[in-house]
Length: 103
Image 1 (cartoon, rainbow, N blue to C red):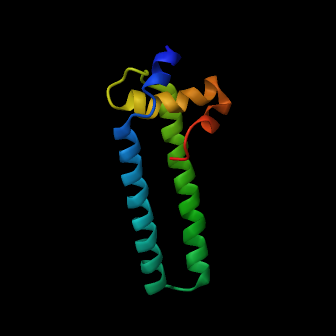
Image 2: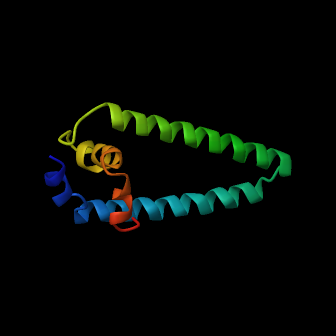
């Protein structure tokens, strides 16, 4: 089952989608920095906002990780090969993340 998944692991459409996601994320970060600079309310408010955001992001990513490990299969439409497969693969082969490109 894992070998069949390996063959179709990173199709061109998935790499293109991840490239678009990366560009969108960078644009959002730039916009966030611009808004923060324009509306700076002092270093303490900025620091507390940053710390709070890091906890929120860590919690949400942990929930997504848990859901991908818990629900669905490799054959679940859309999410199976794109999200569930890679999340579960690192439990089977922890070195797997080092065997493909950075994106």
